[in-house]
Length: 215
Image 1 (cartoon, rainbow, N blue to C red):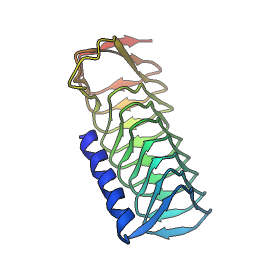
Image 2: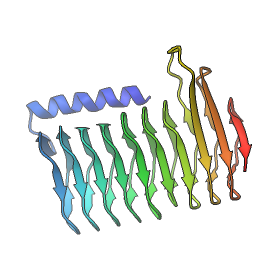
Image 3: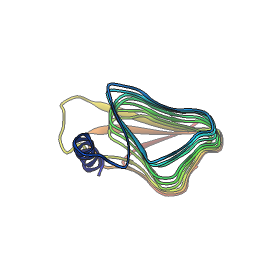
Image 4: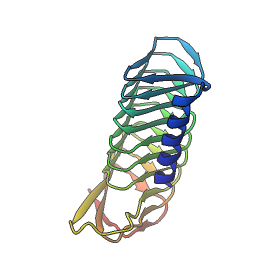
């Protein structure tokens, strides 16, 4: 699922560079939306980062190939996608869609919400007082939930469809009363996953193919 989404994104970038598209396309430059600004349309950068200021609204997606996406506080935006870069989301933000990073971590601060999935391939997912409407998926990223974070769906460690020959270990940490309403599922038999539960945190569904440590 993650790979298909990234291929689609790169195809959109290629088409957008050839034809006029609905939104802003920047090559080798950063994109900045100022505080309290409302922007209609998507933001796309190749070799540049995207910055969204406090209280801003973007009525469209934010996409970058080689750059990070930084979202300040009280921002409303749609899908966020980066291939090589971190995604950092401030307090009380609403992401009305998905958050996807291939080679970079995803961090969300208190009071923020993602209505759909958060996906990474090689990046950590860190949620502080955050609500995720559907679930979390990763291949090689550790996951940490604290400050009463809530995941309404599953946490899935995706199968790489091949063994690299190296031992792989990941951790999933739930702290400070955080809750996963769905299951934790490890699809890859070649990875050792440990789920740490502390501070009254809980997984309401099943935990499959992972060790559980209650602290």
